[in-house]
Length: 316
Image 1: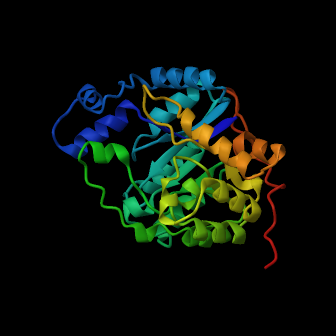
Image 2: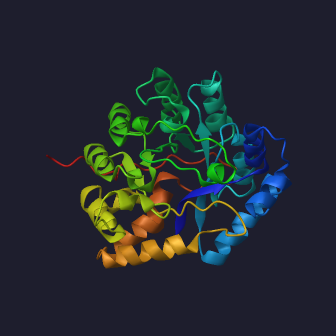
């Protein structure tokens, strides 16, 4: 089993939130207020994640730098155990150094997931600045573009009283389809089944065989569609996108909670109730992740993934 969606809440993450709050809180103060453990160094946090994954039988995980400008923290964790961790980083395409930062993160630091949050950064996916950074990701096989769509709620910001001025109109999976068609060999990942835009995410995935859906979080967006169940979500997603394009994730983040076992248990039960075969379950829980992000070693660049088995678009 692998986890395609874990957040790496580093010292830099908390320092950035402290600056945004404007009160000069130390990392220890924020963690005390949140009743979370302090992260320590990136190496220490990576070690804690490694032990946590061992405890729950998780082989590999994507670690997401959860504020812009925190590439170094995740890169340090990946360098510590590149066979286990895959590094993702958040990028604001409107930043003056966005292209340079993307190139360094991917080509020098070896991070393999470019994360875009159009609703957060107020940059439409049709913007030329988005295309510029995707060009860099597309030039390095083994790199995915992660695009958050639908409803966006950042719990830690709410707990700290930080504003979240998100423009949800910009998080449309159909805009991801436009990019996926332009870069047909580039894997794209839409998390949380589209986070409330499930229909649009399915349409995008049906049109573009390089779009994948991650299953992460509690998927509480389901409440926006009366009568919808997680069982039905899995069953429909498999019937349209195919099991080969679903990536299991938990959206785990802080300690002491650690890896979110309850999310796994809930999703495992939904998969069973949906009648998904053991072989397809194995794809969702880990094999798809390994195909998109082949394990690397400390002394080698990550290998080129095999996309030859990517399903072709269905006839309409």
